[in-house]
Length: 202
Length: 202
DNA sequence: TCAAATATACCTATCAGTAGATAGGTTAGA
DNA sequence: TCTAACCTATCTACTGATAGGTATATTTGA
Image (cartoon, rainbow over all chains, first blue to last red; front, side):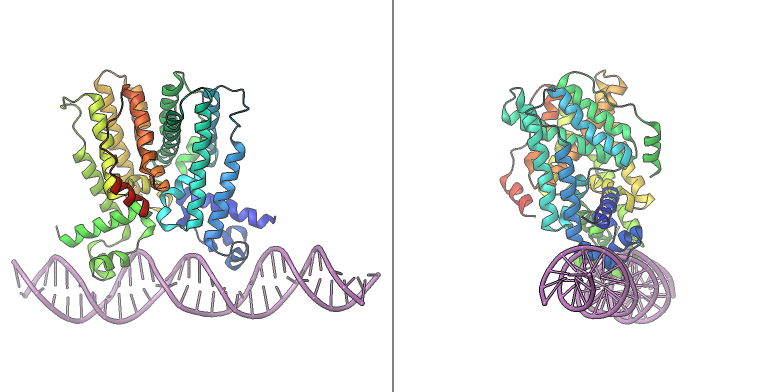
């Protein structure tokens, strides 16, 4: 796997998660890597191919980072906390929004390939969450309801925080949710002032 | 106020709420109204002007639709139900996402004018929600936390439902939230099968 | 072993299409 | 006669994409 190909995906993901799929061109990517736009087409024949590759890579990364709920000895509350942290920390130090939240919004302008990969993201997350909630005896319909609620709050929190350039919005939204679910406070790593400042300036 | 100007905003809002600000051109609008793109520039000199006008109009509409919490004799639960319904019904029969959720996501590519109007949307909603929650004695920090949670869930729910073309995702997420807040079920108008089918096909 | 063939990763040059925007002309109604 | 609301025509900039060339490295076969 060539390094260039990976770097192109890195840059594309960066652009998508800041301004959406339409916010960058092959020439932008080329400039970033000091190559020509025709060379970008060598690695990804079409922009849809690139978008699909980036989204698939994102899903794989997400899937790999999810703690296996069945085998895990962690409590449900702790599993959920780790799940929330995945969103939180990535936002904190990459100052970016969930890739699939961005692509969700642009759905009408994207190719079927990309949309299918975004669909897979939802399926992946909802099935993991449902599994977690079902674990301690919650009936499947309730577990599914909870899953939708959690994912919606997380994505909505990210988008609102990004829009207002205020990480606290995310923290407030999610800690409210967590308390409703587990009747205890959500512990998050201390708000790093540098990261927040960096988010503001971006 | 010319009719054309209003129609242009209607069409622009429609495009934005389906595919984002970058998903349409002045030529698209011109075609929709059977005029020329130069005439669109007559009404809105720049695309930023148009975007700002559309977002401001959206805010005004939202503000007007919000029931005044102070004077209202409705319970907090009922006020919230009505608030939720604003998002729900608009999604149901316009098959579209919250305008500001779309614009939030594209923030990095938009002008300062548009972004300021989106900021005003969050301020407007959060202050209304906070006022509602404060009404029955909830301390301000808790009320604010609730407000972030509610708005995040609603916007995240809309985006997820739009992405998956499945209204039920929104309903699940929001009814979960509502039950946490008021310990009773959220009553929503029956899912209109036609509207859902229409959403799926779009 | 060494030349021929192939593959990889880039390049130049260019295409047709579309974008937002502007200058300046036309028309119809007050 | 003035102005609002359109028009034609055109500009520059940028988009994704393609054709075809080059240099380097790797693999293959006699």
